[in-house]
Image (cartoon, rainbow, N blue to C red):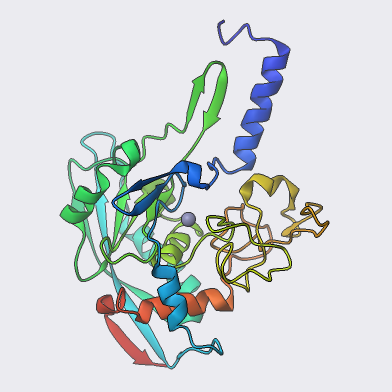
Length: 322
Ligand SMILES: [Zn+2]
């Protein structure tokens, strides 16, 4: 059957599929089914984070003071080195002003945690790999890439070309998926973030990845179990953070009124209504029209604690009294 002779029913299905994918920000569900275990690390088919190193988040939580107070007397600065990987042809050029703007976006997002970032430099790598080449076959090329190009004294942000081919048609059904970037969640082995070049100035993507880098999970995480709306289990389920409301995930983004930045009318089996924090940097929802992206206080605490932990503190460039 050619693509031009499909029935109206098929059209309706394709339209529905497209709408779902658009509505879901072209995101595949983050479930264990999407994950492959390799070298004790889960590689998740997640558009933003890719790997979860089990155990680290608990280490971080154990380091958190019980009263949730944390030392904000000093601002700590991390050096950031950008590595621009250019493909042999059609490489997207990266302007230094855009890199400086990306650092500004990061510094704005992390100021309340007294964490800042300093641009150490920009290096160009010719004959570089594309994002598709790094992520194909369960990120098979990534460990070698990381070993070869990561700096050992800075957070390395790798900017990769993106072939722009996000959609495919199989059996008359179009599906779209896009990888914006990925990083480890608080893993000392790979101190880097991989980002697609078109996402450099996206005001959510880089702070989101940095959130993973400093130990945060997605607000809709359900690996250990779905967080209940009443949140009596919020320390062990969901994102393990009690100040972020239970989040059913981007599949339910159709319930969101983005003009009010609120999910309306989606309830759990007990009739309680979900009210996730739509504008949280670690959610998968679209930006709200009038409400800026934000982290919660407890997310800042986790990141601050992670930043000062042995997994990340060797990278600190300077600490200045506030
Ligand atoms: Zn993510």
